[in-house]
Structures are given as C-alpha cells and as structure tokens.
Image (cartoon, helix red, strand yellow):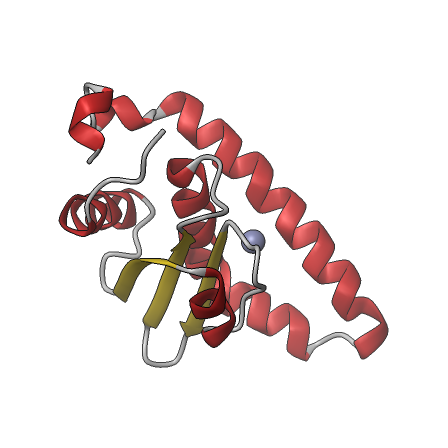
Length: 135
Ligand SMILES: [Zn+2]
C-alpha cells in the first residue's frame, strides 16, 4: 500500500487524532528517509517514529519512506504513543532504570495490539477507497 500524499496524510492524521481525543495536539506528520528517522530519535530502519513534547502537546511523527510495510497501521501506532505520553511519562518517572526496558517492551506490545484492533475496526478504506488514490 503506497503512502498517500503529505496533504492526505495530514487529513488522515487529523481525523485519527479526533478519534483518539488528541485533537488538541499539534502533530507534525511527514514521511522520512532513514537518516531523517534518526534526527527525531528513531532508528535508521524504523517503520515509524515519534518525538513527543507532552508538556507543550507537540509531536513529530515520521513514517519511514523506505521501510514502512503498512503506513496506516504505523501512523496509528505512533498516534497511540501520543495518547499514552503522559501516562507513560508517569510510569517512567516512578520506576527504576532496571524496569525501563521492560516498560518500553510491554508498552510497544500493548500499542501494537491496539493498532491491530483499530485498523480492523476502522480500516484505511475509510480514507482511501481505491489504491490509485494513494499517490
Ligand atoms: Zn512504538
């Protein structure tokens, strides 16, 4: 499935943010090359990455141009991280360093499961009816 245009990606992000009740966040969504993923704290081959400023409710979401398998699922996954941000921050500040990687791991698993469920309930066809529209 091709990643839609930046304009369409913005429109989809706005709608998903409303559904997740994070519409008051300023979300900067773009596709990115591997090095650009690293610039916001992701890894070179990540399918998606998010950089969150939960105090100012600002987030940069990047979808890996060359690495993403399912951009819609990845977008939703990154938006769930935004929804989770203050809760996760609270958990992190209340646990010791030993539990940090454990928290990250279970957090990722939980978000992956939620993203999977969501895209089956609210599939990409709500936005893009036909694959030819994707470019
Ligand atoms: Zn994640």
